[in-house]
Length: 121
Image 1 (cartoon, helix red, strand yellow):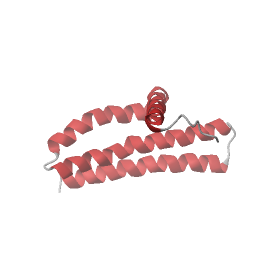
Image 2 (cartoon, rainbow, N blue to C red):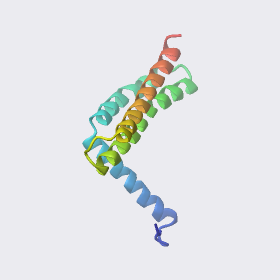
Image 3 (spheres, one colour):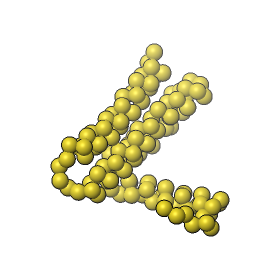
Image 4 (cartoon, one colour):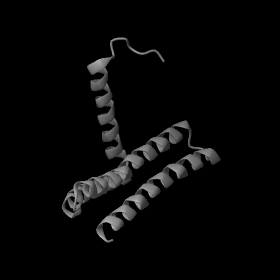
């Protein structure tokens, strides 16, 4: 793929930021799980700042939670690409979707374990 020679520096950053915002808007519009995770994020971020005893604890509580919507975005991207290929059932398509979903689950378990370790023990 050829790149636009005038698309460098700050212009490239502006365009890339625009594409990123379009991706976030699309995820919000089309992905229920992403909207749910954003709602939880609105609750958990202030809670992390309040419950964390130190700066590193607060940062860790926030960072491990932010992995959840991050992996949800990646899972949604995988699902969109698989669905774009076609509606027919295929073992590899199912595997790709299942693995993407598993990544979200691992992020959720990771966040829960870290929150428990910091806040309870």
